[in-house]
Image (tube, rainbow, N blue to C red; front, top):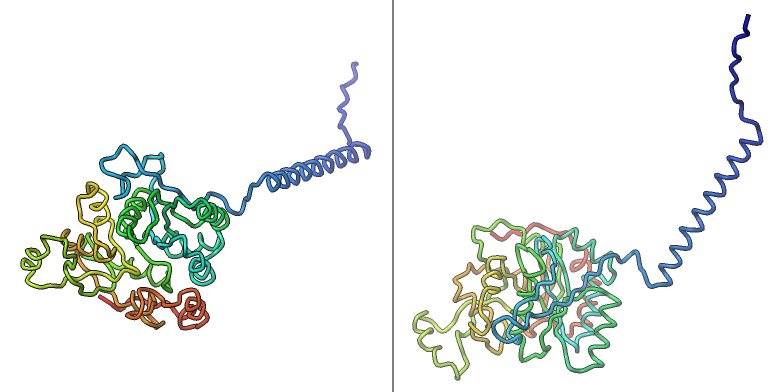
Length: 344
């Protein structure tokens, strides 16, 4: 009678268990070495994982567009997708304002990449310093160093000159519109103390008008330039010598208004010496809704102030580098609760 086949069950020996354990340890050690080498290599080659995607961007102008680039030009298509945010806040600055930018970065404008991103995520607003170019090679070199260190700029391909601020302002709105899909585009100066959280609440309000010009409004002369031949007929048409426009340190234009500015042919609207008067005259011609907010022109910090500057003594803080730090050290300015706007 044939014997039944015997079934054998393998029993791992102590040697096999030790071998498996040693191999596993070797693999773990090798993996740790590889990851450590990659990390050190990236640091040595200039990679910085904490920074991620650069925030600063340089906007070039389409030289083939109609008109000269000095009046705005067209933003060249670099294949960039427009980012959707509630608002873009362009802090207008210049080559002589490094001290102001330093003061802002020590107060309400975060100096580090992660801090700026957290502010933007919490408010729905993007914040960038806005500056043009200069023929001074040393100044451009210093700017490039600052951009590399802080990564918080929107660089415009336009000559940075005080006499050409209206051109720069129009260029800013065109560039911001090309890069970001916003409900509002905010122009602000680098010498005001700002509460971004409260600005966010103001911009988020429901509004019946799609074309909104938001700012601290004042009445200014229609046109005081004696070279203009048509200011008298316009004055007669209005029946008064003054029109409403926002103070220059900070104001906002809704998306529909900026879209209309972007669609304008270069040199189709007259430029004046004052940038706020220039924008205000355009808003008058476009028949937009003027929304007056005194929270944007407070002379001191209050429970509802959004922008603080030395109105009417200065167009901004009179001594911004010093005053900015003084304001930020006061709890009423930097740490008071953010209250919903009580303005209708």
